[in-house]
Length: 302
Ligand SMILES: [Zn+2]
Image (cartoon, rainbow, N blue to C red; front, side, top):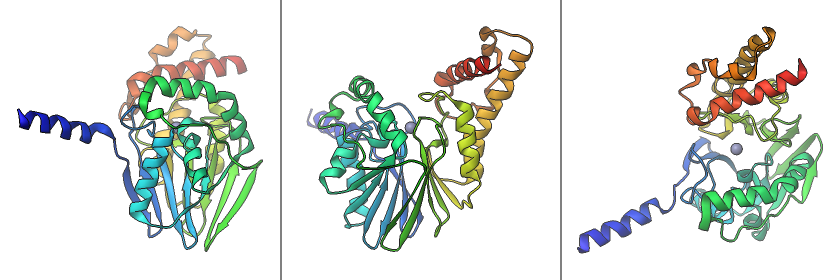
């Protein structure tokens, strides 16, 4: 009996938090890689990838997590890497895991930066994001209050902390309306936020503008990139990002164009054979929806 109770306790402790994996990119840069599946009570909403840069004057965090507890989890992981304080938090977009942990880091004294478009998008969608999280992560939402960026920019913004320089660029909507990419020239590292999904299938919403997403990706891809830390999945190269994100969007565009060119209907999108992207997680649940969204957008333009 004692053994069973012990196993139950241990089991609970073990599943209570799905830990994020730490991927070291360079001596001072890390990717924190969350689960690829849906937001859950165990992952605290952090089904996303985040960037951490340790400078001689403190830490820059790329994306604050989906909840107060999700932010705390990120902070605890950072504390295992360094005892330096979190000085700057960048929100790369409007999706919950990019910004709903802001309140936690604001209390620690961090400055929060996003594009003006991202902050606008967050303000419009905050209530629906909170109610969705309430449904998906339940008790793990405890303590979460929306806190928006105190510094916003229109097209580009430069950050300097200690010896570290970063350049932030807003080039139009991608996965969400205010997505930005963040470039670190000294290490040739690109932090793409939700502009890149590695290892899992992207979802064309919430911005539902795959053409703008492709254009933003093309602008990002012009940079000299050694390592790309995506918004979802493992850090990798521009080549992987192109394969898992850009080529998928291009594929859908070409397949939907074939249907529209013969005056086909929305019903025909189920005939598109997307199986070459089957290796991406969440393929079953999202591939059909993606084709539908591409059709809707392209039909409007035709
Ligand atoms: Zn995301």
